[in-house]
Image 1 (spheres, one colour):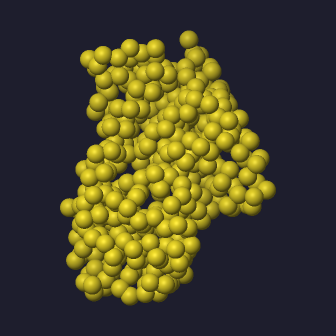
Image 2 (image 1 turned 90 degrees about the horizontal axis):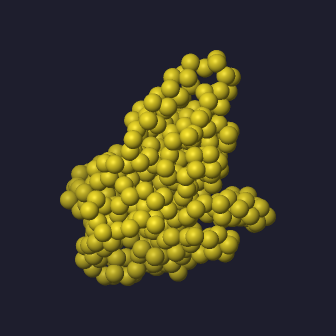
Image 3 (image 1 turned 120 degrees about the horizontal axis):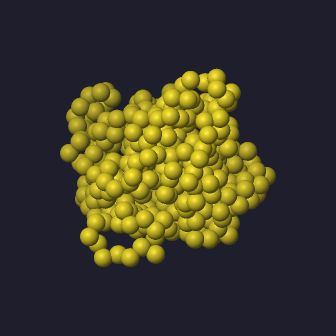
Length: 411
């Protein structure tokens, strides 16, 4: 029996009423007789990308399709707060971190997760929550799955230089070797894990909400009017954070090389950038339906990150019936081919401009229709979560993860 004391989660024991109230709420919820699963990560912020969308989609799917699973997200926030299915733990903001927060204590994070009395934990990062998840799993006597959503070593090299890659990779490897199972969203990330000698890897692509991202969200005339453009404009769109690894500069320079009638629409990713010819910056959108409207109203989606672990926004564009131009590297190259778009040979402006031209020499609308079919047939969230639940059931031994009535023996 797990016995987490209130003093373990407080900075100053006995002095923080908000922590005490939150802890009491968590302890009460831990009495739920259902199978309890915790997802924890620091990659969860108001302007988060694919990890947050994955977690929210999973929560909704589990509630609708696995009622015997009590699912809780444990994530950082501005204050301590607990409500059914969501535990927010106060953590400081990262400087220049686009709203992300960095939990400071592995032990306190571990205690909070253990206090939920989990049967299974999934860690969505290799930072404080991931390390705390491993400690909580040992304390609760339950397995811990690590979902590898990124390549921290590659990011370290990009931002700090090649000297930073090896130390980060060594620490990354040491952590992921401790998980009972490691889920990779792409073969690209799986290869990186294998190079780091991480065992027990399962490749499981992410999915897309095909009812939210769909072609009939399009309002091309309305978007052209909003942007002040003529009807013969060719609209290329990218939506996401203005992160360095997204190679936004490649997209901008490629469109400038192409000239009329091409225009680049940046949703969120262009904020703070200087004004550029043929480039239109729109604010970050928190409503997925608003993103779907913009993407579906454009002619093609462009994505120049050559180290993308997966690229959930690419799937969302495909579900909107848009052809995709990407780079023949990273996770995007596993989703995009000539049937649904074009791949540039390198993440540099000339090659990317050539790939865009090659796409528009073909039937772009037919390619977009094929992209929609692929997104629906291969990448619906329902299919993804059914597969993940098989992994969860096998690792945890909890039959509630398996579809009721299905002939499946949990080992």
